[in-house]
Image 1 (tube, rainbow, N blue to C red):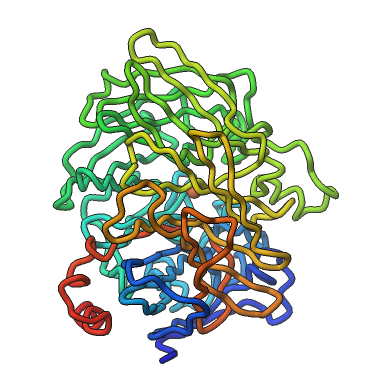
Image 2: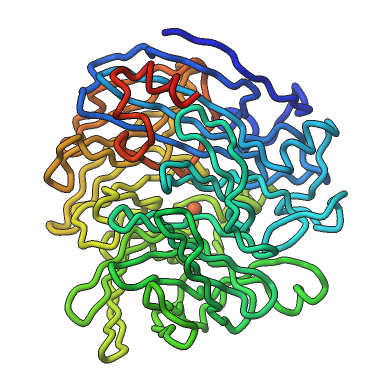
Length: 503
Ligand SMILES: [Fe+2]
């Protein structure tokens, strides 16, 4: 392994930190690494070709008012690249305006999610306002560039997908509103579909960026009031938005207090709009009340749109654990508390009817698919199981939606994974003809690995484990980008040359 420390962020976190989401598996990093020719246990297949990218909430300062929430951490992207049976690794902080400002002042400047916005020392970002746009939620690849985004809406930061150098912000980002996490990169059209939300009418917008990175569509999607949508879906012809009945309590909002409450008396509303449709063309479908954090996929079947996602039985968890501050505050992060289960909504475009069914009893979330099946009928979804009471992933599950069966792999006690991306094998034909890739935080061995599974045989465990230079913090959203989608990657005759070309 050829390793070099290439950067180091200033951190003012205390040595005796005891915050549960800044210690243990969530202990943040300050180092930025370049590591080539990584040590591999097992054998990396030569037809695993491309990059696994993962975002991470990685704080470097304490919370301004002492109430750190794990969504406040600064964005750090990890990349593990695979080519010719070898692997490389890089990690870099996203150079957001907020991160750079706080590196300069050497102290926190913005209040976090669990703190009063008035504590912020500077104007901030986010649907709530007064937050630091840390770009630490999601990462996708569009038009050959990695894009990091923030769950409360902010700038779209552009990063080189190999070196992770921050290339600036997407010029098309709507001013004031920004862009939410979970824009969708459609491999078939090269388009990026996105939404944003805020506290002013119309409360939601939907937009399309074309394959040449130009904003070509942007429309109002009026809602009854401020909402907290987190994800969207799409089919070949439609984009799918949502109005979940979990939102800031209006009376408290008038007093500047942002307290999310679930309203079981209100339905889940699912909005369907033609991909280049107008505001007037949005159709709303009403379904059983819940909050949906993530959708898996959607596709058209006859008169229906089939939409798969995770239904929460308890969106505002009543189970407060032992009642301690941390248990109460972070109960919204634990899959077992929210009781999220794979679910299917069928939206009939002809009759307006909705049929829904629970697909699994097992609690899972963070479902990923083979990206080539985005918007198309898919058979498989790869999801995470959670550690009880924690925002940590204990294993992965391959859901077979055709047979109703699952394959499960547990990382083992003290080992936590990330969102697992599906990497189609070069020249693949079938939907599960490829590999599953995830990063682990291994508290037993004090290290991190990138695990590679054969997607057809998940329960057999990883076929290769790639050692990273240091233990990295637990993190969540990830993506896969084929080498063929990255400029310069396939045309270079070696991986080393491809990397140099991009540097
Ligand atoms: Fe998310």
